Length: 342
Image 1 (cartoon, helix red, strand yellow):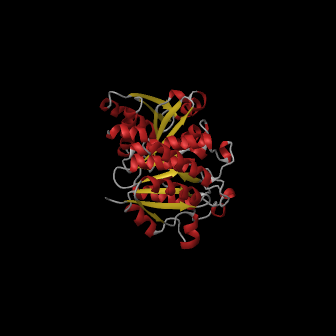
Image 2 (cartoon, helix red, strand yellow):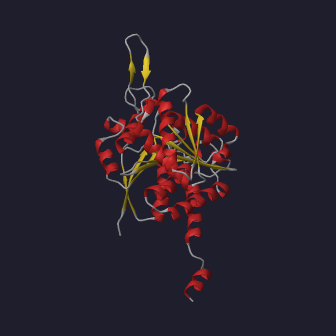
Image 3 (spheres, helix red, strand yellow):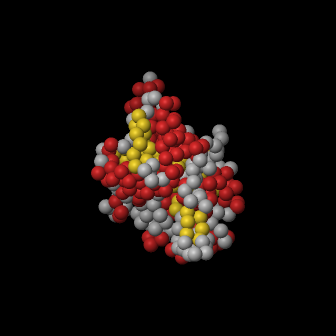
């Protein structure tokens, strides 16, 4: 049997704690080889850079990358920052499609965010007159590949794709709308609608249940996915998967490193565990295990909530509850087994 290799980047703050919960659960489900690697602020402290060459090489050779969180207050505004490692890793692995699922009361939507283009990857700098610039740059090919991913995912869901842009004011958005519209004929079973990004933000607050799948560019996706998370419980519950066409994906919670509670055992690992479910589904081809883990996390949020979710449980207790729910769900009942073999 092939052993699956997972590159683990615990990162900073509560990252190591939620990563430990995630690897405990993942190891209970599959035979995996876990390699822990330096990344983010801790890597800057120890090695002088947020994404060491050995870490990148290990990620490239892995079946999937599991990332805890990055960011430490001491690096805010510094020339070398933990977040630079994250941007570099995304670009190096070319994980252009960031999936941000959001579920709640009457809400089931998926945001597909383009992840390796736009403002975050465009030319930027300071001029001699003191002004600064950040360039939003997109090619038709960059737009087409993420839009196709959006169409394909919408086809697997409820068949409605909302493309969010600012075509009323931005040339890159006019190109975006043109390319996305040109692909619609290849997906006759998907209904395409265009909506200005600010209107999408408004609708996410007022009527989030109207959305199925949203595809958008990098900056808009960054903002809109956080809005979507806020209306269904906050960033502490939000997971993400960043996927390319070849090579490993990156699976990480959306929340920050929360250095103020690091080491206290209070961090909620739900978002990280939901990211493991995405890893199982999109990274390792195990959709049945993914659904079981999603249900187990939902159950633990009800029976054993952490402080941020209205309870008193710590990270380890929440992880124990998820493992117990998984064991109950995945162990065949004795009567059913007797019936099957008689």
